[in-house]
Image 1: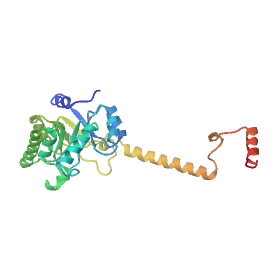
Image 2: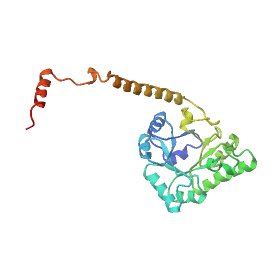
Image 3: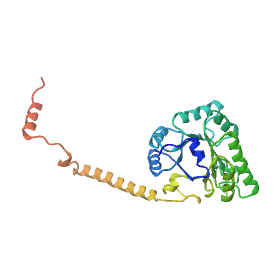
Image 4: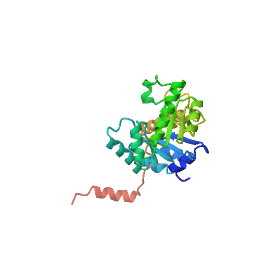
Length: 265
């Protein structure tokens, strides 16, 4: 499968449902690639080049974390660096003028509306946003601001399904639902939730498809047992045995000993 362009992504609106996940390392990138996931988000950090190489078909969004850039020049520099290193778009949950600045320079931007964890204190904590008319209108206004600034997509987190569906119908951007129901253009989950590797409570909106935490624990026990057995056999002399060593013919060894005993010349 060839990698989507921005035009390809936008052409999916109303025609096919997209899937979006998070990538933390090369192993997950390879898995998402093999599974046919279309879109993924990865933080712009050391190792991002390897993640890009491991997932050549994914539309990859590199995350520009809020607060990491402290000037207009730095914001643009980070975005250009992301694109240079293989990003198809950048995740930028910042103010409208920052998004517009990036879009004006040809950088595709993915925003964030609804529950935004870093700003949850202003909306009453880590809970759904949009259950009242006032809140729903604020979500809609945020979507329109992103659209007006030139963003190509938004993540919509924990917004009531009917609200999210109607907003998705009314914007030209791709809307990725994270806990906002199935009426958006794509569904977005953290890979650790999907694979059962999240520590602590699984979010209500997520669904677990595997129990890799238990498998990782089992593999850890096996590694510890193997390492302990190696240490114990080294202590007892059981390792190494003749199978793990290299032999030398008796005549050759005797001649070697004879040479060792000769005075140095």
